[in-house]
Length: 480
Ligand code: ADP
Image (cartoon, protein in one colour):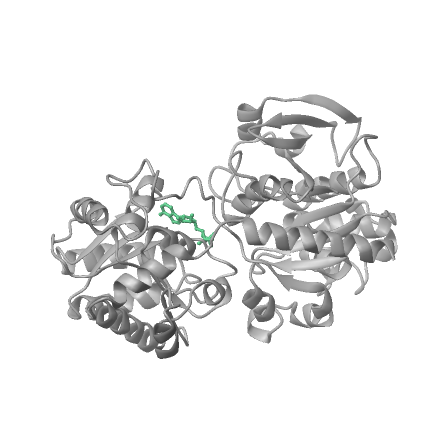
C-alpha cells in the first residue's frame, strides 16, 4: 500500500513541535507493515540545506503566484517530495513565522499550495507513485483531503488532529485563490463561521479522522475541547479514532543516552544516583535524598504551568525539590526565577530550550510534573516512563491514556506507573504532589512504580500497527 504523508514539518529536517516527531517516526515504523509511506513537505531553505535538492519530477509555470517544481529525493531514510516554490517558502524564519515570530500573512496560500500538490500526486501527477491514501496533518495540510474529495480521486484521505487549537481560519476573500470549485464554499465544505476553515474542511471531507490519543478523540467532541468543531466531530464519530504517539526509542534510551553521565537499564539505583547528583549541581539544588520533581515544558497556560507556580511553595513545604526547564510566557519565566530565589537549594530554574538537559532531568529526577489543561498526546510523560522518572499528570488527553494511576487497586495489582489528578486546578495538583511524596517515602512502592513504568511499551510498534490497520480499513471503505 502506498501512503503519502502531506506535512508542514518533519523530524529531523524541520521541527517546531510533536507533529514533526510523528511525521518523522511513522514512515520507518510502517515499513514493517508493508506500507510505503512517502512525505511531501515544503522546500524550506533549512530543509534543502540538509537534504539537497533532488530531481525535478514536475514543473508548474505558475503555481499559486509563482513558478514551482516538485522534487523527489531520499534523505536519512526518508523518501521525500519537496514542493520547491521560492515565492512561498524561500524566506527566513520558521515554517510558519518570520524571524520576529510573526505569522506569514500568506500562510493560507503557502499551505493551500502544499495541500494541492498532495492531491495532485493522488490524482496521478507522476506515473510511478500514486498514493492509495493521502494522510494530512493539522490545519496546514487538512485542505489536501478537501482537494482529493472535490477532484473525485479514488484515493482515501485521513486527517490527523495533533492540536485542535490551531484551525487555519481565514477571511472568505481568499476563497477564489484556493483553486477549489465554487460549491466548496458551503457549510458542507470549507465555509466556517462566514470565513474559510482549513481544518474544518479537512475534518468534514476526509475519509477518516484520527486524534493523537483516544481520550483526546473524545475531548474534541465536547463543547470545551471541541473549540467550535465539537458538532462536526460528533457527527463524524464513526470515522474518528485516537492513536497515541510513540517515542523515538533510539534517541530516548537510558541504556545508551549520550547526554547522561551514567546510563542505566531497569531500576539501576546507583546510576540514577550519579545522574541525580549531576542534576542537583546543574540546578543549584541541595544534594540530599529529598524527592526531585522536574518540569520540561513550554511555560504556557495550556501546560498548566501557572498552577504549578502557585503550588511551588507548597511543594517545598513538603520537603521536596523542584527543577524547572522551560521557556515561554515571560510572566511564568519570571515566576519560576523568583521561586528559585525564594527557595535556594530547593527550587532550581533554567530558562531556555536545552535538549541535553531535558535528558538529564528525565534520567536524574524522581518524578516529572505535567499539569496540562489539555494535552493531545504528550511526549514528556512517555520519556519519564522510559527513564524511571515517575509521571505526575493531569487526567486529560494522552496523559490519561498512557499513565496508570497509583490508586489502591492498581498498586495491589502491581500495574501502576504514575499519578493522575483531576480536576486540573491548584488543590488537586497539591494533593497529587502530596500523594507522590508519600509514595516516595513508602518503602518499595516508588521502586515498583518506577519499574512498572520502565516496562511500559512507549515505542511506535503498537501505534504503527494501528495506523496500518486504519489505512487498510479506509482503503476498503473507499473501494466499496
Ligand atoms: P508540546 O509539543 O505540546 O510542546 P510534547 O510533550 O508533545 O508537548 O512535546 C514537547 C517536547 O519538547 C518534548 O520532546 C520535550 O522534551 C521538549 N521540550 C519542551 N521544552 C523543552 C525545553 N525547554 N528544553 C528541551 N526540551 C524541551
